Length: 225
Image: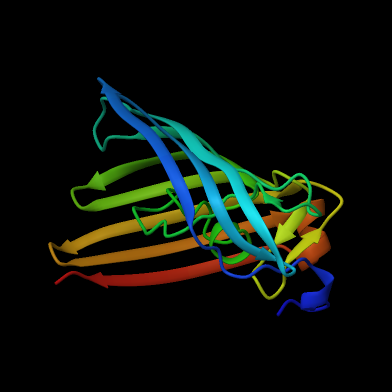
């Protein structure tokens, strides 16, 4: 549990049930330019909030563009905006905060936006992310990338987990983050990842986690069978 917080200080709700989703997406390439996007509308029964039945009506989605230059090592530039709705009234029985459900893993900066904030601080609900990424392929099977992310809350509250609840904050600006990632295809069945990163908080994050910067380093080895 977060230091200084207990379940009674936030609004707690039980696990969702019977939430439905309508999804529409696109992915198109024109020469070196790739455009992609997805829109999701969620509706239905959202379980209980403090013992009262709740209904869900939430939105999520992203728009992204990647341009790959026609040069050796295939350098690219990528921009992406991601949105997951938050709840503009924490006291009614309508849930407008997006339910991330089971996003899975499709690559870095896809569903987990930022290896510090996206993985350890903010789940895919009540947030807006702006990503600017560049990278290149120094040789076949190796990819290097550098990403900048700006994180914001959609509505001024923090949702950490069901046992913490939704905790109001006074600002929406969460923070800034840099990720430097290296991916290696060592074998058709073996993948190696190395990453380092830094994040600095803005006012909303400072109210929850304090004003210290965050650093991370990670190494993954992935075996496919």
